[in-house]
Length: 472
Image (tube, rainbow, N blue to C red; front, side):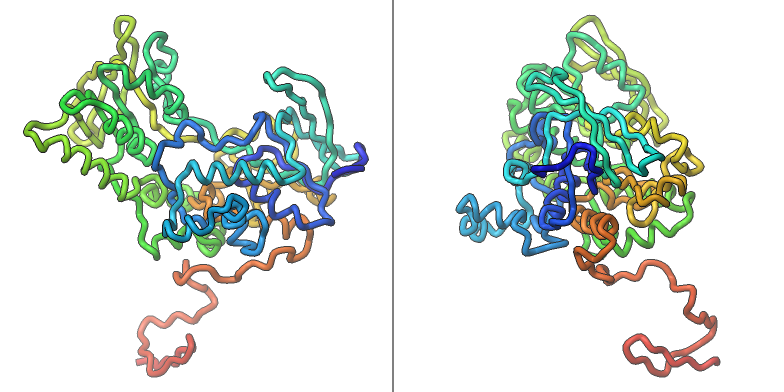
């Protein structure tokens, strides 16, 4: 804020400006008692620009914007954005509950252009704790338009919120592909930047059976000539499976489930996350339908499209063949069979991983408390569990989208963004700045151990949850 004294500790410094910290910034804006600033290394907001394929939609309703599920009256809502663009009536008549990803990106950029306190072109280098003054020191480098360092700076703060997001994940067997010169091997995150190169290749292989893989395969399929498609689509999952999208299934993305999950034992949480892949890694049923429709359209004049779609396959190894091709060594998980595939280009739709916190938090290693797998422990208020000498002084580090191991599969979900941001702001301010609902799901996750358990009983009357029991 104007007039801020450089050595006066701020209340909050956000590191990273993706949707989650942007949500926090938007909800922090009306809290005038809060001195907050947000830093982002990039020069401007960009949300998965390589995957803003025409027609690709968000998998959450537009109500999962930056603020609405915590403050529907906020001036930073998606509907407020439409109003400023004179697009409310067209949106009303479009009757779209799920908006295009490109529109969500444009909405976030509108917020960034109008919301104060956002520092783009600021690369945070380190966070340290100063025990003499009970504050965090945040060191940053101010970058010029070309990304070159222009100046060094330091901010002091009582609270840090890490929202540094995720990065493309390339499994080890596939890393030699990325390093193969002369052959287009790209992660789906960069798909649009390389689409023309991919379309010029005789044969393209898409690896990954999630939503990104499906969207890339569909986009390539629509743009390749009938009968000469030259496309392979491979995935490790047993099927090109639809995402679980039933209404009760979606209650796994509620604060109620998050609280239940957080209270479970660590080994149980780890098993659950692995088993729940279809809740968040499956493919939208509409995308699967569109792929089948496109494939079917290409059979109308007889013959089958030149495409191979094979689930249940993993890539054992991969390498360059001659100078212009790649050879994939494949293994079918259930058949226990192996084969080789030669291809001219590869798209790795292999997902994302949480960016490691260690680079920024290396100076805090002595204070951090880790779990049995060397991951940071995170409490129910999204705070890193740290030595009491830090937290006892009123200093805390919060995380956004870095807590799947402690808070479950809802961690990267946009539908929980506003709720989590509001919970963090309530914790930082020490008051109920944003009243939050105490119940958000019809499902009751877990048993209340305080309730009496009777093995043999029959109910003879019940009123609003009160059960009268007779042993019999």
